[in-house]
Image (cartoon, rainbow, N blue to C red):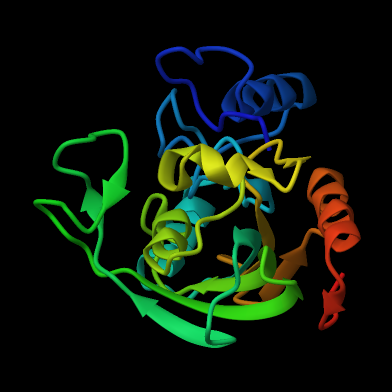
Length: 227
C-alpha cells in the first residue's frame, strides 16, 4: 500500500516499475517487455492504497500465459476489506456492470456509456457491532475499482475510501482510517511454463490490524476473524 504501480502524471518516479527496473538492471535478471517501457512485466495492478499480493512476469512467454488466465477469469483471487456497517446478508453475490463514470471521469460506476460485466462474491467474516465488518471478497471479474464500487453499491463502502464513500468512512467513532482498507490476500494461478498451480498468500497488514483492534475496543466481538 502507498506504492504507485507504474509511472503516470504526478508519479513519474518512486513506483513499483521503477523499483523493478532497478532490481533487474543491477541483478542481471529479465522482465517481460510486452508492457513496453512504462509497464514492463505488469500483468495486472493494484490501486495505490491497496496492499497485498501481485505477480510480475519475467519473460514474454510468462506474460502471455498469465494475461490469458486473467482474461478468462481463471485466476484465484481473495481480497479482504473492512467496510462501513454490516450487510444484512452474511454471504452474497453482487452483479453490477460498471465502467468509467459519465461525469466523474476519474471514477467508475454503473452510470457509464460502456458498462462491462462485473461480478463479486462476498462473505462477512467478522462483525464489529453495527459499526463495521471484516469481509472476504472474491472477484469473478477484474474491473478497475470493482470491489470499491460494488461494496458502495451494497450500501457498505470500504473504510477509508473517500472517493466512493465520502469523508464519513474515514473516521469511525473517533478511530481514524489511514487508507482504503482493502488487501489482496491470495493470488493463485497455473505456472505459464509447467502448468503447476501455485498460490501465494499475504497476511493481514499491520495498519489494518491496528484499525481492527481499535474497532474491537469499541464493540463486543461477533464471530472470529481469520488471521
